[in-house]
Image (cartoon, protein in one colour):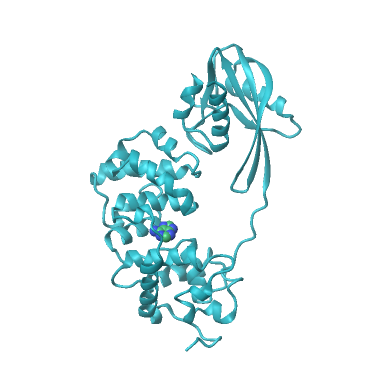
Length: 368
Ligand code: ADE
């Protein structure tokens, strides 16, 4: 029987039906993903952190490389932050990588080389929010713990016809409670993944494939034709144009590479000195100013060599890159943490931001 259009649906009352429909669907349609090959908690944890704010297709090659370099929790804890950042380079949101690495050290120091099985043991571990802890423990150890992330939130809001803002209370709390109430007693790991997988493959933000949905018989949004308005979405943030200058300072065959501060954007990663233009400044003026203020070196500024356009979150960055020749002076900076004169062939081993990598590749290939 289809649901009458004014009926309310209660999470507890459809628990058995939901688990049956969802687990059958997942068994048939789940994607073959590298972190689904076994139930190793460490591998699942890495995948869950990488998948935050990042598409599955983007994550796969990063996951494979990361696990090849650090196959175990102890291996990750023993790595340097620079190695971890280099393998994360291009995935963005680098805070995740630094937290993952710090968390591995904390876990190994307090629990040894095995991933803890109890949620209490993960409390306070860097970057380990409720979602991440529950996702790992439910998938690796069948702990009955609920998860909530963008895909499963969409499924729950539509299924139960919740039209309010899911990022705010009271709906936020209602969703956590609902996610807990619908958990089956068996196959929790698959159930949680199935909620997310359904959101990713069927119950998509635009044009959901309701005809293929195992939950269509009870879906309130579908019965009321509200799939397009549920869940409520915040208006997309307006794109912001950012204009930057970067300078490659040459000294003999070497190039000046500087390390960013330990906090803030791209923390501890390396770059060719760069900065945003201030009001009214030209790219050339910004290049001269940032060298003076952030390196103290005396240089002769040369021509522009490349303009790099790059989008990250809502920022549209245009970075104009110059070359310069070192004249004299000693590197001093209140901003940058460190500096090195490197050979173009050495650039590949330093973690840098995505636009800076484009520039580094240009320089390395010009040098070949
Ligand atoms: N998104 C984040 N983790 C996931 C998982 N394990 N399965 C499907 N989608 C996900």
